[in-house]
Amino acid sequence: MSDERKERRIGIVGYGRLGQYLVQRILGEGSLNNLQLAFVWNRQLEKMDGAVPEHLQLQDLSQFSQRQADLIVEVAHPSITRDHGAKFLSSANFMVGSPTALADQATEKQLREASRHSGKSLYIPSGALWGGEDIQKMADRGTLKALKVTMTKHPDSFKLEGALVEHKERARSRRLVLYEGPVRALCPLAPNNVNTMAAACMAAHTLGFDGVVGVLIADPGLSDWHLVDIEVTGPTDEQSGDTFTVKTSRRNPARPGFVTGAETFASFWSSLLVCTGHGGRVYLC
Image (cartoon, rainbow, N blue to C red; front, side, top):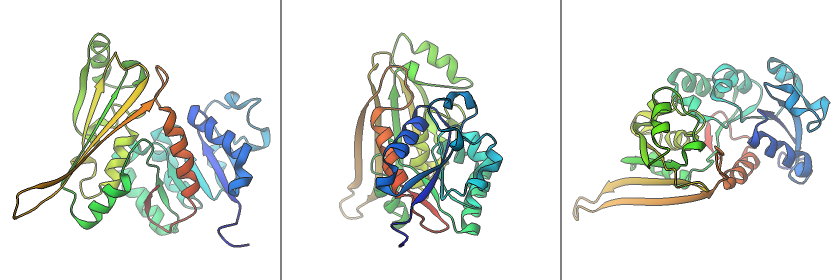
């Protein structure tokens, strides 16, 4: 059997809305894509009762290697990647569904080194990031000069920490910019909301978490949509003085109060299908 036809065993870490979506797609149509569910782990095991076959439920995450997964997908919380990511990479490819974890420099360095050492791939799903591969190509060529990512959502769609909690409450009556600045400082304040920005930082590796600008806006009039606006700045022509720029605007339908928009689910599934093994490196998918 060729590598392309080999059935891949997938471990899912986290059983929230996104985890449930991925599990059900693998159980329902995994055979069509040569996928098999290796395990599902969730902090609250009872949440899987009646939905995930008992033999596929992993009670102790430290025992993940016994399930011999080819790919482990984290869709739980950034702390999972910080605490277990390097261990996952010792025996499996690893897709980081919460790339805000990589805003911690020690975690990013540890995972990059683990990937190189094991030869397993560290996958960064594009999620709601539009044009990530193009951004990465510009970074590879050294032509990416600036990148700004603006995310706008209803206040109820934000799960915030620290000083941003108070800002969010003020935004219930008016549109308010909650944050504007380097993405690195924003990630621990909004770990569940700015994974798109974190993915952009990994794509724009010459700028990174300190060079990419993130803007977070709460808009009480925006109940059914998540907006992502991306502004890319490239080189300036020496003769004309004209600067290369690209601006995209993504309108993602989202139910009120939901952290993840509808189309992002399909994007994650497409990313999972790409994770077939690309060697010991970081790969945007």
